[in-house]
Image (cartoon, rainbow, N blue to C red; front, side):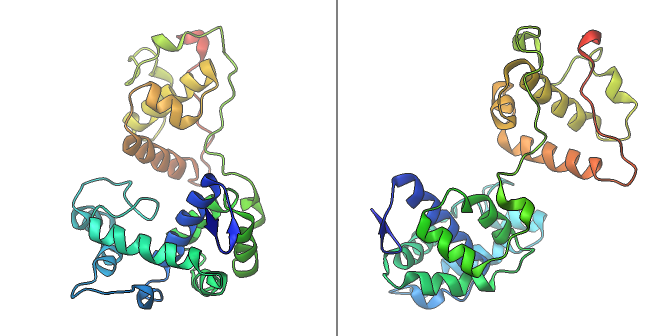
Length: 245
């Protein structure tokens, strides 16, 4: 398969699609003219208008109740998904598509969700896509590597059986968390995830799935705990001491 005039692997192509779709949605309606046969309605515009609403209104407008269905996920409306994919593929199939893409990338606000998504995808995109990104977008230096959310090494592999870890944590395990001024439910969920990471070396996402925590709940816990940890004077959150378990 090809992307921006070059042969690419399936993995590169998939991430080029994600990056291009983020650029299209983040700068809409710049790409409206790329729809070959526009219908009487504009499902892509309706989808993006829903994404740009405040969070409670956005989930209601998207109609599926999933917090995670944002710029990183395809539209739930098949017509919007089809039109968005048609625009994206038209850009990537065009030998001059890098010029079109560069215009969209340069127009992305640096604080937008699409810009953040682009930073996440860039390192996994094809060389041609990365060349366009480097020319058109300025990332902070710290974004050069993969983002790390609460890294937790497997310090207790072989010493802690992950099968005894549950969510929510037992009350006696969560005593050290009760003194902290934060959401008890989110702290317990976060501590359980970290304990699984300490016991197995899994990623945060994999640890959550091991515990049966839905990805939407994982995202909610991550956002809440991160915001709490960034409060002025806040000390770093610690998981319960293994000695107390």
